Amino acid sequence: MHFNFPKRPVLVEKSPTNAARMLWLQKEFPNAHFIAIVRNGYAVAEGIRRKVKHDIELCAKQWTVSNEIMLRDFEKLNHKLLVKYEDFTADPVAQTKRITDFLNISPLSEQVLNSEFKIRGDQSSIRNMNTRSFAALSDEDRNAIRSVGAASLDQFHYTENE
Picture 1 (spheres, one colour):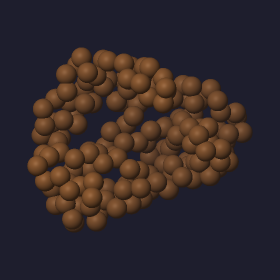
Picture 2: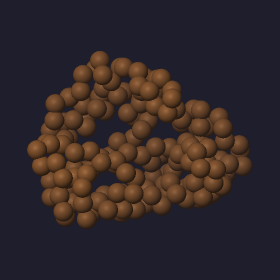
Picture 3: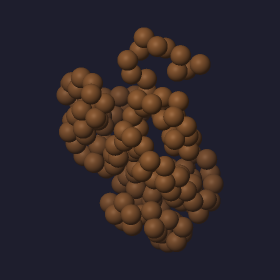
Picture 4: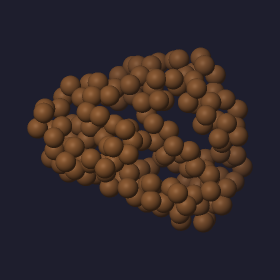
């Protein structure tokens, strides 16, 4: 029912679970464009643990399996773009231009991208929050994340502190 707005030229849907439905979505919406966003697995695992209190191994497994599923089907998509969170937060203007060019839509103004946003009660501009997550990890946590997610971490060139 959320997709039933035929007069809207662009519809954005961001549910992580839809990474497992990309091929079906492409079949049902042939002009669908997919933007995959990846983020350092150390920071993601820490964030999942902080929010839902799971063991760090399970959090790292969620990040790893989610990326494996997404990348498996990503290769079969007609319209796809991969964006790294770290690249986006380092240069939101350039990365947003990549995205709007890919979608063939008008670019967003730099004023919007340089604004502050309220997210979960915090007022902030676009910035990389990985450092905070890295600081919350113990050496034991880092080793556990590495043991679970080494292949994915290496594939994206992620280390435990950058």
